[in-house]
Length: 252
Length: 260
Image 1 (tube, rainbow over the protein chains, first blue to last red):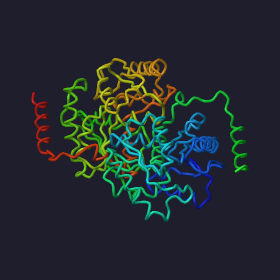
Image 2: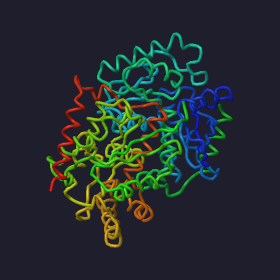
Image 3: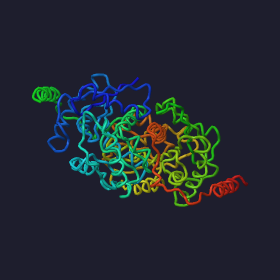
Image 4: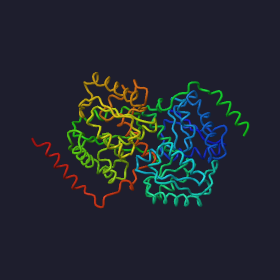
């Protein structure tokens, strides 16, 4: 039996966590692997400026810092921004998977180029930054958004009648731009995956469920991130990081 | 998502005795495959003598295409090929709608999920052209820290049997050169025939070591679990498939090998 910790990037209540957990039904996960969803204790209110990205890096690092000591076998981040992944990888020996970079790389096992579906215009900055940082911009046929403000707690929910067709139209623009594969640019889009996969002529990668299967793959193969690629700090500062987030939670 | 058993066809790129095929099949013990995956190994009816020249690559492509082109109508859910060369994959992907996994590409891409730059550890310098071809196709030459070999003519049928004492320490030594001198932070085994060395190397090296065969089976499972397959847009179907012609060509090819 393996236990996977899924870190949710907003301090959500149980109802909203359940909507995140629903991603587990969108892939055939192994019966011998369990997934515990844990929200961060504090963080940004949205996700469109370097201020937000930095806060999320720290919040996710803190939320996952004790994963190994808590008895988990792997960690997954429930955001395609991969916030906190590099820092967690530098601290943990168990595999840590971020769905963003992994889903774009995985798309290259299915086609030669991918298109990324973004939520709205303010999300484009972070996506372009990630594509550059991950060295994957050359494989990207385009980034298109569907002009809808994200709801990190309620996701798409009852707005689907209006929103799903807009997502499909944005995906079609990506296909026209030359994308062989569509990558959903956020794990919060998972409710639309079935709708889009049914209607589009190219594969649609659902980053959250893919990250669960990749973590299962790494566990089955006995693999984890490379230590030389993610060196440990000379002096880990766990107490400082926890204190910062405790204070952040009180202050927010 | 359903939980039924998935039948995966593994194509072995050389005609083999059942004992030799068994050695290839031992790879499935090297990863914890889910019980829902069932592997079926099948060898090609003919083959090049090795994978060292463009002549060989073409023969490898057509023999693997022939061995797998009916996989879907035979009831398989996915196809893996038992060679890092990815021979035949593009053509099989153009004919089949079930996932066809390319172990070479998959291994390099997975390496980038674990580290920044990978090194390819090979048996033989004459295989380097295969890796360079895949890296060029992926446009990932700059992610490869180095390709090194132990300069040994490999035995694709009997693998490392009887040669472990000599071969394993040399592979270890050359892998360390990839890490320490070339800057590799992940090691990719350059052939599925090296699977017997994986455990030895992983125990001794400070970085992840990717075993391409088992990794390809787990990747097939990942694709099946998510309902994903290759993009038709990237692998367009032919206007007119020629399965009878391809079959006849391989029957003729096999005959030339069996004629004394």
